Image 1 (cartoon, chains in turn cyan, yellow):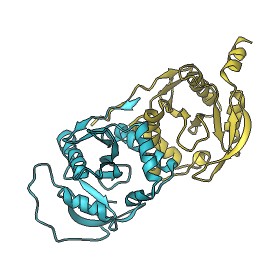
Image 2: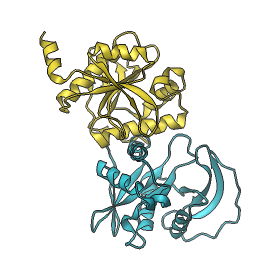
Image 3: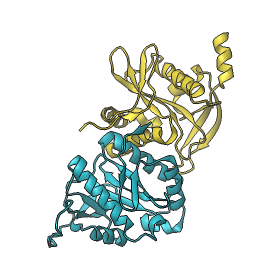
Image 4: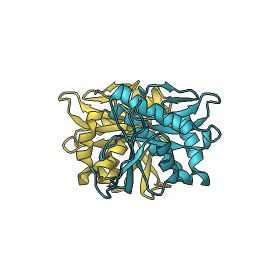
Length: 188
Length: 183
């Protein structure tokens, strides 16, 4: 009763299919004030719908989100993956990390790069975009850490103005910064 | 690129219907259904983007609970007639048996036939000891299906997060069904 989700191992992390237990871990995280860094707190009902849709996304789009767990403790650290629902401007490389890997420096970037590399290798998707709210300093820093560059602003029907950060392809040398920055353009 | 199928969803057949795993191809018919007023008792009308997420979440429900919604095919034509399912998202009072028919497929007993098969699966293979259906009190055709299934209205209920209200119908438990069959 699962979509076939590939498993990826990195040096310190495992990316695998989301499960019922991961929902509980995520609901517990989003019940805490600390989840404000991911747009929380959120009700269990809302977290359920997101996790269920992320699992179903694999069946509908043949890509989706993985659960990220630590290989040392098997603790849940959040999710990373590809998001391309109806109406989205383009396939997105997205992530939501709990505090599960806060004591593992660089783990979040490690997970993002693993998902990015898989998308290029297995689905020929790239260079990928990440859609980030201009106020989300944490996500903007992470995007920069993995070599993405701010490309332009775009208005989404539900989310308002977001920035498109463009990732490099696996193995690319860091690209020079682009200066063009337009607001309100896009395919949405 | 062919999307990976949802693995392990049991396929059920009744006299006139096939209950099969929801697929990518089912999205457009459901988007069309949710664009009409006919969807008003099941959360609609909804824009395409919201239908997509709801469809994805229904697929994911199978992985999270081990049961979920089937897409309902008319065996004679292969046409998608609606859906029937076993549903228990977070926030629901308890596991539910649900049904939705598209325009043109009502009035033939399809919902009752499909819900009976879903309930038999729940009571047999899944070991459920009871079941409810959550029905908008203005949805008389759906209430008629619940009655035909032997269910009775039990209580009114308000969704804790979304705030909408519905009536809970209680299905007869498995032993009563066994007696009904023996009678």
